Length: 340
Image 1 (spheres, rainbow, N blue to C red):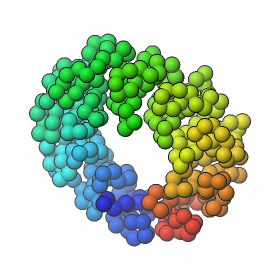
Image 2: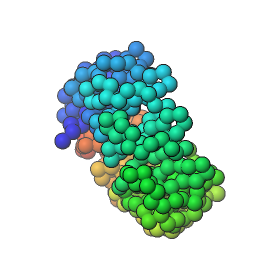
Image 3: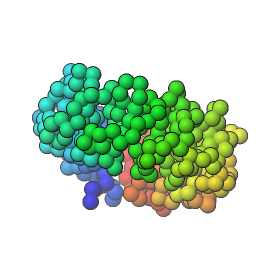
Image 4: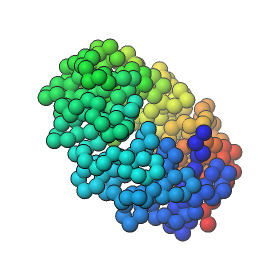
């Protein structure tokens, strides 16, 4: 089981602690990312360097860019070419590709001479480069492009079904793929059937077509609502902003205030907050009178409104900031660690 580590700050430098407030990695880095699959990335000499959970740096090579680890490989860039390192920091697949994606289901999409194909963990071609673009495998299928059309292929490189649009995303765990066409998106099921033609507005930096608890945010005419996994509109686009579902509730903005609705669109927590987060571990961070606190799923305040910034709970702790100082609190509101 992976140990959860929490980012801490001291004298402008970052390190990590465990959930009990014990320092595990001393604050010594000017930039450090949260841990993912057992590794963080810190910045050293203006380069990203992977670091393991006991603070060891993988420094056998310096690269222009280092990705995150997926299936114990991380993609790396040197000048304008890409390869992969292993979890010891050794170059596992030589830098040679024009582009490279993460490994999923033992294969990674890469390109050479502007043609995309798939390699295995030994760096050998499994599906030769022949596509204009290529996405990751999920449940044995991956989206690829050829000319102005798209298709899903299996791990033998055989076309399972074609897609009547120019681009599509890998399947989600619910067996749905997002179709993209002319700045709009729709949905395709695992049988290759279009269940929603691209009709919703595509927006950068929004979880386009990503489902949470059976609902996905959609935007139509500048307003937000939700669809279900059959592609049916279940919550009309009535909101100025909308977030993802968690614990059966989603944050929405209406008439200048934030509140929470259920999966059918019924208001469960009134529009009475200046800003809100998402529910995590039974609580959500909300802002009222310019300060953040936490409410439970009934909307009842459970941690007082006293913080300048706040994040969701994760493994029993939440990051908060007050008067420029970081802290971590538990679900009773008690301080577990505080910046000095």
